[in-house]
Length: 336
Image 1 (cartoon, helix red, strand yellow):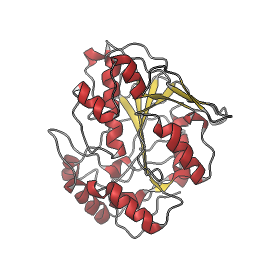
Image 2 (tube, rainbow, N blue to C red):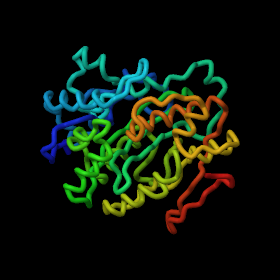
Image 3 (tube, rainbow, N blue to C red):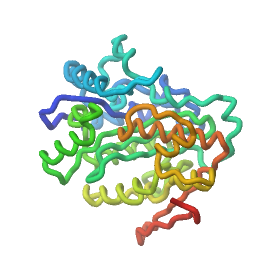
């Protein structure tokens, strides 16, 4: 299914996922991938799982207007550049424009480099990959970003990113909701152009998981060799199940367990941190990007995660949902 602008609102920013062929070997020019069990990723500018999922290119004029809005709302720190959200959505048409490449980052791992000497300090983990997930949206999910981290190299080797269009809200309510959520950071225009229904995004996400050999649809069940990492229980305990009900789909089985980074942080450091910002302040990690933009928050959570892994933390499952009763069991005695 092609991405179609169903609103009359101009484009604004892009969101994500890079293309790969499910049947051919893949080479990833944007990340130093160390996937040992999954095929190497071949990133292209136009992302697709199949012809039916291939996004439509955006008019250059719309993209330029939206990127100007994004730049005007961004706060720059030394060396930091905002992600090209058209690129993360597989719709960037300016990859041959030097001025565009100078202004916008097209490498999700750019701000997530780890000193090779520090990697030697980490301990072995129970999984090969960690999936950093940080949803945005209170009434319904508005943004679905996931970063795939290799626990051996601590590199972010891939990402999946989508804007989500609410399915039960009236258009005027959606517009007001988006203006309040994303307007101040210049993302509202892109959101209106690229957002898709949650059920379609879940289908695309499952194809992405299958491609990386992290889940088998036929077998169902939890992830293979991977765990979700969230900053709190809200994302997978509360919001995803709520959204599945609203969207009229079953809760996918791979969302049944997760690592709450807050609980691991509490037990590892012996002190409490109520959120991402608290963790970063305590660890002396400066904020990069825009707080409450999901893709940026996911990257900052990944930086906290890298810091903890280098320090010797073990990322254990902290919560598990019973598929039959849907009751969630919390596995750590000391928890937030």
